[in-house]
Length: 327
Image (cartoon, rainbow, N blue to C red; front, side, top):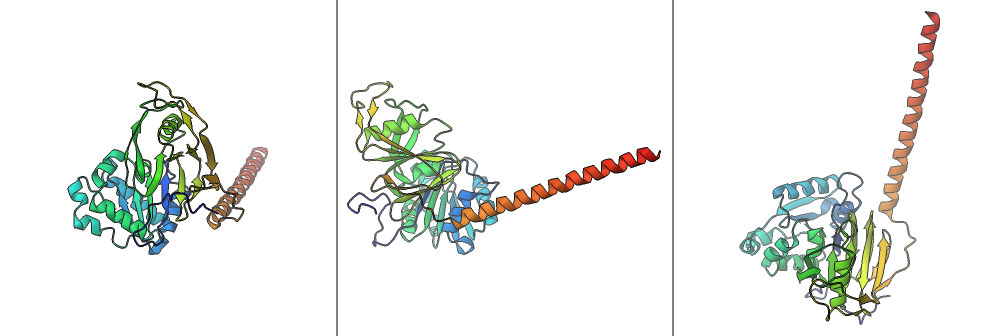
């Protein structure tokens, strides 16, 4: 059970209705294999009946980023895909741009530069339309830079390292879908524990989420986080933290004690309101079971093919020996 008195983590809706889920992805999600994360996003967006809007403002790849995800979402059973790439605040306030989100059941923000994304979209009509769509039940996802931008507090940039240091990270305002949460991505691969610890120690009301690559956290309307993907999600809870951050100067290491860390791989869930790990759900996930069956079937086919190949090689060897014997 969640603690109803604890602050909500998902942005509340204006009419009190249920919000859609938020999916934050650590970047470098699988785009060629089983596509577990992107398939789950398409499923949450309504599958073939859904309408997905891809916002590629953060990316330096231009429309190529939109085209890539349009292709992938089509391959995993998605419906209509619309691309948006406002590059100025004027474009983000254009009614025609905003209208592209009408009826959207899923909104996907690509990777790139989160400051570009928040600077162009934050506080505009498009930014408000994203919140409105989410308030009407649409799933909103972001990968890499797009993941950092979904929260009220955005990890804008910073340095790598496992030791928390003063001035190690710079935080700005994000798009506001996750309240009192700060998200960092490429977490294990780029050694970003230090800067997440530093931010949470300086602002202990925040919950820090560190997302490994090809790993996602899905937060539902009850503020329950579910982990899927290949890596882990590191959760930093600073509610009882002790620190000397207010004494530290320059870029020196800061003392951080009593911060609670959780490292959760795929299948685990976390209550963001109560700040605790939930019991592992023993109910088999249909999608996981389907993927497992597919892998088993593939292995069986490969094993059978290897057996046939071995027998064919043996038959060729015997025929060759017979020919040599008859010469």
